[in-house]
Length: 167
Image 1 (cartoon, rainbow, N blue to C red):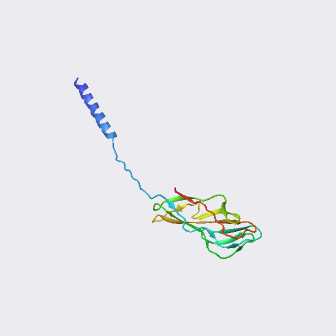
Image 2: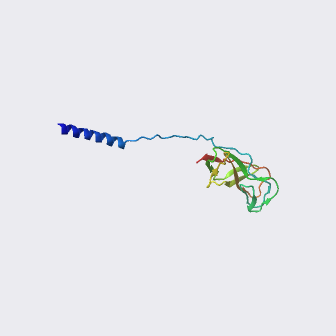
Image 3: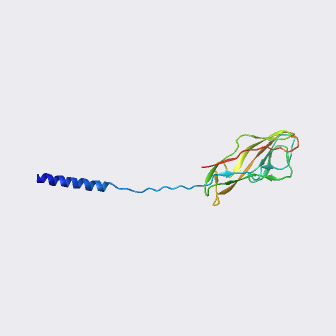
């Protein structure tokens, strides 16, 4: 009986030691960074300046940085203010965001009907934007004006949507 009690005591001690050696605990942490909602506004419109319509259809392009060129056709570039559109974007410091621009043609109405197409941005849609250390970036937008042949003179205007969203 003494041997049986001794063996049992050794077995219990081994189980207790083995169990204590295989157990451990750790404490996890949790965190969150709250950032401002992303927002966008339009402070400067896309302006093609003054153009003298030609006898044939023409295409005038304004880059996001505000450089105007006659891409094709018989129109003549005249004076006026030429600008790429400017959209201040604000949000979380160092955050990246996607840009969505119109993909089709946007109607510009006036005495006749014209179209705004091939809308581009800087930074580009492909690269997206990055908010600086103050949580800001200016998104610039340009496009292509499709002028009809022998357009009626007058002011033409239209609106287009630019959307930004956090990645």
